[in-house]
Length: 447
Image: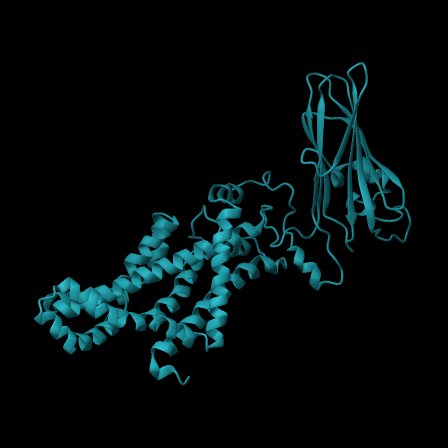
């Protein structure tokens, strides 16, 4: 009943409702992330080389950038015969030779030229290599020969790096010359519409097979963009959510309840134990918290488990113990505590069932408000280069962006996206914590 009344009171504050909605969304993302991208796969992808992300261009902005631009950037495209996203027809003659025709149609609607186009060949043969002929078909019906050559078992054709293609385009780079209406004219216009790459392969042995993949690197890729290693930043933004929330929530819960238990035990037993707790608390108050964590990360381990353990140990005797002690001193003298002692209740029962529960409603707002501090602490350590080297987190993304000069290169999305996630998470818990404080603390209800 009391909980229901508190919830109804909480719903009266728009800031609390907004905070709870944001927290629920973050919680939903935290549940979705490990389901959509299991932990092992996320680590494998995040630690993968450029070969893992060969389909992505470097430094690509998120695709939603185009909604705010009048000049549309090119989207990255990947079409593969092995995956069924491109057509593949095989005609075999009575001598065992085959003609394999593969087509890669795509619609080009951007107002700028792409970064690069590549054909990746995967051939399966015994001795005689397949011979391929690649052609570029434009929306106005022109055919431009890309090349004729034998292919190895693994080979690639980078359009911009082939001097023969450039020569056929009158000296223009492939990413420009293949998309204009007349490469040899003085005035050239980018031509939008349906393009097609056609690859015809001739095999000379039975059971020879060939798969081809066409990749176009644009200026935008995915919903979060890419970094200097072509990695999809969406992985770090998704997985950074459960990491940040778990770190902040667990650290806040453990330290808050530890402070309550330590303060209550010191007040109840008094004497040398209370004095010892107060002196230890004063020592911890003057310890350089962040420098100690930096030293641990630098000289010992950057594992998030080690850093989390160090945070808990350094926070066990926080400043709130002194304020809690003052409140517990008043509760200790309450009549119901005297009654409990009279009927023989044990020390543990009195501390954990009679003293601490009286203060829990007042500590709930402090617990919620403390979560952003731990979230920002984990991100700050990662930004300083002391985050877990394995986990993809918001702070790690900001650190990579800073190390690779994202702001100097105008790659603002790289820094802004994780920063916005951090700010939204901090704002949500701050709004909810302040509203809870107004509910449980009558002196603040008029604010």
